[in-house]
Image 1 (tube, rainbow, N blue to C red):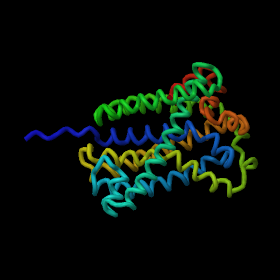
Image 2: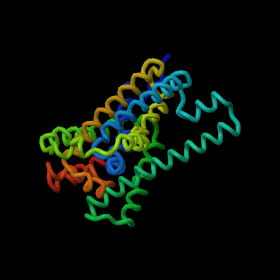
Image 3: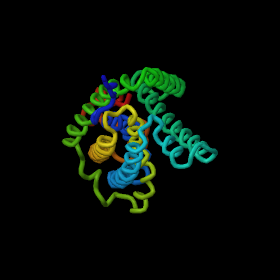
Image 4: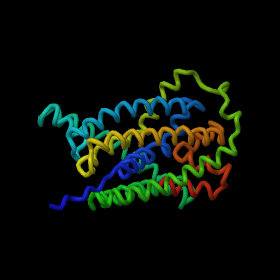
Length: 280
């Protein structure tokens, strides 16, 4: 008897997790986190990554035990049954997901507006934000196979640009900008962990692939750990590249498109546009 082909293998799930995390994190939160933790944001990203690893471990175990596209909502039902409590918590979960999606959509709108219009314009930010939401809604409706294939392409493209930017930007780093003497108090680092952990928020999306994964008991935890560790390493490297190339006030000023702004010292205006494309 012919078995149904599963859309997600190890690397498809890893790419989905990486794409979800990077899209929701590094392009959005560098400026915000930098305003709190200064040039020690990289330390905050380490703590955020550790928390994500611990959470990811628990979710991966649940996903292996209860393979479902429902993800966290399914685990709530399995634990508490179908009732008011599980339903209420599920609604709160979906509301938090909506906030995360809105943030990512706004970032897309901001980067697109800066690249096409050349200046921040609320009307066009809203138009582009809604446009990307509709685009990915139709991709999701197309099914798991389309999601897996499109995510692989998007992630490879995005990571190629980010890694290239990071490597080249390291040659332009000004060590004085990373000096510990200019660092904020230690308590600020802990205050910024909520933001940097949010940059890993997309890791839970991996659990939604369990029903479409070849062997979730074997691959789920492995894909979760690989994705989070890779993103943690990437975030730390990018943070050094950005904060080593731009003074903190400039990063905060360009907080909605700090990565693109940080590409200017090494790549000029073309670097800004290329990084803006990667953010899309």
